[in-house]
Each structure stands twice: as C-alpha cells, then as structure tokens.
Amino acid sequence: MENFIVAYPLFLGGIGLPEIIAILVVILLFFGAKKIPELMKSMGKGIKSFKEGMNEVEKDIDASAPGKENEDKGTPSGNASA
Image (cartoon, rainbow, N blue to C red; front, side, top):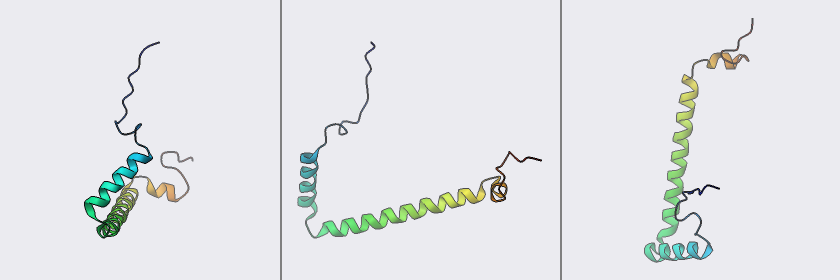
C-alpha cells in the first residue's frame, strides 16, 4: 500500500475537555468576569448582523437570477415543453 499523508490542522485531533477548560480559564483571567457577558452580547449582535447581511445578499442574488420568472410559473428554466 502507498503511504498517504493526511493534512489535518494541528488542533483538530488533539483538543479535548482539559484544553477547552484551560482556554476558558485563560480567557476569564484575561478579560475578567464582568467583561465576558458584554463580549458575548456584542459577539451575538455581530453574528446576527452578519446573518442578516448574508440573507440580504442571497435575496438580491435570487432576485437578479435569470429565469426566475419561469420558476415562478411552475416550469423550470430551460426545460419548457410545448
């Protein structure tokens, strides 16, 4: 058999519960207990804004897609039968 080299990110296979706890403790020490809820709130707002922007872009793309009128009438674009 041939030897295959599989490229994984360094952290993918080796992160477990102890590592996650250590990361959370470092974050707690770095930011403090009072700042973490504020950070999570602002991060949630940012994610919500990003999702809204993505949905808006998808709507714009769908609205400008050629053949959209044919799909609304029930016939797929390019497959209109006589």
